[in-house]
Length: 316
Ligand code: NAP
Image (tube, rainbow, N blue to C red; front, top):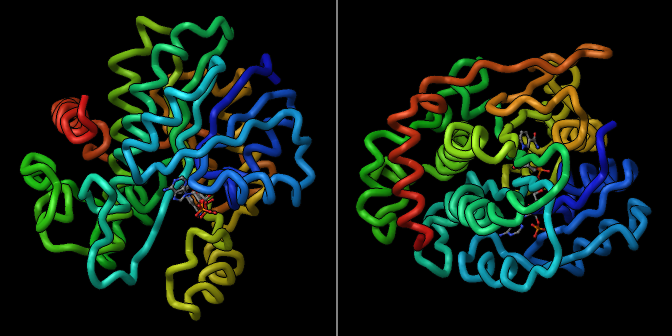
């Protein structure tokens, strides 16, 4: 089971983050939930009957770097583990939405907000005396071209190209890390690729010196969470059915939450640099394994550039 401590989780109003909160509280952890609407997070936790004395709800809009800074400055407690879970997915957008800093909003929320949060929490994680400190980042199959789901050409596979969009400052008229034409579904995949690159680079940069284990995971296809709220209505009906009946990839929200909790707390997952998966077809009592990632996620030269450019974009 591992030693309980204090974990900060982003995005806990629904889905994987909410259910991971429940699983971790059940194991004795105190959870700091970080959301753009803490009241919504408290209401969702109440509905799942998560004991409120184990929860601290804080305001953090991951899409706004100033909000991330302010939230960390206001945090008065130590942190033993961090889960970067919050995400937005808006595949039908015609025009990009922009963060207060002027960045395309899905990359800003899913990658840059979390990237800054990790940097700002590193000292607290280093100072923690917890025996197994961890940073856990939610990755996904659709951003890993080593897996079938990562090869889907609609709208395009994840690809940061030559990073010229990041290099040019990532502001209007630029919308994509590669500097190419805006494709909202690809912007999500690119941001998740950045999440997995960040995990790999964190592992290379900090694990040896700090003992903080850095891992990502694919919890399975949790096809019925509000992540898909901006997809066509027919997709929202067909996709969960397809994943349940045809691919066998469907995972319930509670099982996905338990998987995140395992990666945070279970001694079996204390292996830095791993991208954990349970596969794309769910098997009864299926075991976790280390899923190979694409070169795009593991190439150390590319990762160094993503890291350095992300540092600049978040103002560090
Ligand atoms: P979800 O139910 O939509 O949860 C996303 C969470 O992020 C919500 O609590 C949402 O809160 C929060 N959020 C969005 N924008 C935010 C912002 N600017 N600041 C703070 N919080 C924000 O989706 P999910 O399916 O559980 O996804 C959770 C994670 O799992 C994501 O990283 C996703 O990429 C990953 N994942 C999901 C699947 C899947 O099949 N669902 C598969 C692989 C990986 P609001 O109420 O404020 O919107």
